Structures are given as structure tokens and as C-alpha cells.
Image (cartoon, rainbow, N blue to C red; front, side):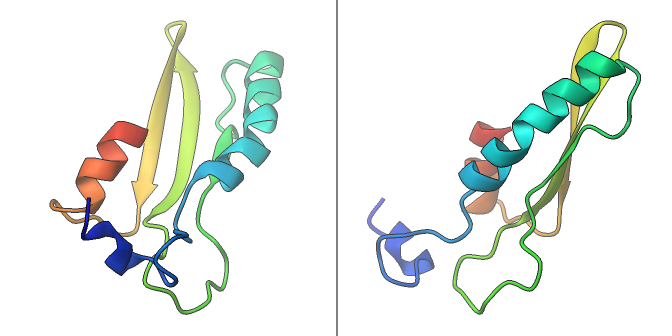
Length: 94
């Protein structure tokens, strides 16, 4: 997408990526649900406390995983979303 670079501070890197915060907390979520499958504490925090000024601030605040009827359900809390850019990206992520 030729327009996507306008959302990067340097034209290459996106500060709002979810990879690092998600990956660094996933093991906690798995252990938490293995230990207690009725837990409500299996939460990944995506939001970056005190973010620096950027064109690309994460819109996702958190992702919660709960097990109900032997199925994993996911609750995603968004601080913001728009139909043109954010929604399309987030649907593929979640």
C-alpha cells in the first residue's frame, strides 16, 4: 500500500505493531489458563504506557482470553478504530 508509509515516523517502522507486547506475554496467558481454566486473568496488555509522540500509536488496549464450554473466547478492548485503516488491519490480527 503506497499510502501506509504516511503512518510511520520514519517511513519504514511502525511503532503501533502488536508483535512484541503480544509475544512477550503469551506464555503467561497459556500458563494461566492451564493452571485455572476458569481464570479471568489471562490478559495481554498491548497499550504502551506513556507513548511518545508518533503517527502510529497502538489502538488496541488489551486482549483477554477466557475458556467457556471448553472453547477459548477472546475479548479485544480498543481505544480507537477507523473503518478505512485500523479496522481492516485489526480484523486480520484478531
